[in-house]
Amino acid sequence: MDIKYVEKLAKLVDEHQLTELTVTEGESKLTLKKEPAKSGEMTQVMPPIQKIQPQIVKEEKVEEKKEERKTNKVIKSPMVGTFYKAPAAGAPPFVEVGGLVAQGEVVCIIEAMKLMNEIESDFSGKVVEICVEDGQPVEYGQTLMYIE
Image (tube, rainbow, N blue to C red; front, side, top):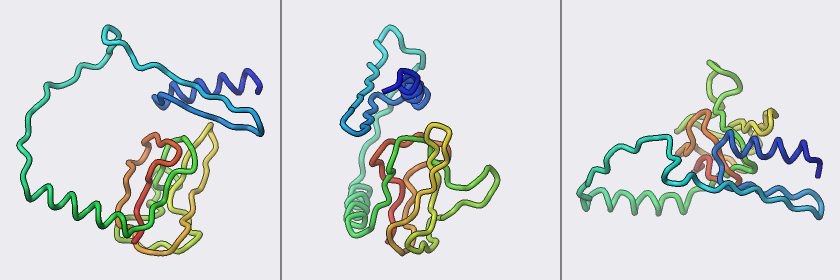
């Protein structure tokens, strides 16, 4: 692999605050790992932890949601990059919760190394949940949305 390509990958890991990135080209495999900051190097101050008493009603809702997700189809990120729900800033999003999606329809864009990659749905259905915020970094295999 070219050293400039490796440097670009290292910059991508740093920009998106990833801890690990693996790239495979043919028979070559490269893994970049970034160690988490040591306790003395922390730059953010964490707010104090608040104790919250769980409620039985909330636990039941969580279980229902997990069961619902098992029956839904999942669109996962095919790459590491930045998630965008619309083709341009200020443009309407490709899909919204409750909207219908056809197989092969573009549902979002993932920017990877300054390339905009359109992500298409592998199936038709209704968008139940969008799991990623606009402009948020995503990892390979991360769930982007659920389709019913």
